[in-house]
Image (cartoon, rainbow, N blue to C red; front, side):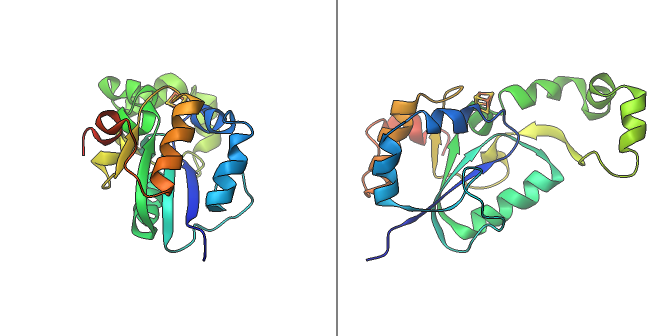
Length: 175
Ligand code: SF4
């Protein structure tokens, strides 16, 4: 029987959530026994495949490119998991929200950098950085900045084996 397929996606986050995923150490072998990894920053596959069973998503939705990506990933994913506080609440990327997009860009990039980007190098930012569930339906939430490695491992194991994770309250809030 084919194993379920599994993907991870990195939107607007610092990669700390993926680092915590890698911190499950040798338990990754157990995850690899349960699933086929079909897309992730940790494997070299460029296109997001069709009909993925589970996708973990790190990071907030911050640009038009992020919106297009997460909408496509949502279409192709059966169980979508917001992975870490940036994906769950907006967290660090959303700190820019009270200042407005233009002000934040002005504060972050001096004029000479903006001149460098003037031919379209800077991605088109949304007015606000958003948590995933403001853009697409999310099936589960794993909070934490980053979520602890043992929680990631236990929750993934439960989800992949078809059980509802034990930490039901905090993985399903906001649904
Ligand atoms: S939740 Fe924390 S560790 Fe994860 S991407 Fe955001 S800032 Fe980084």
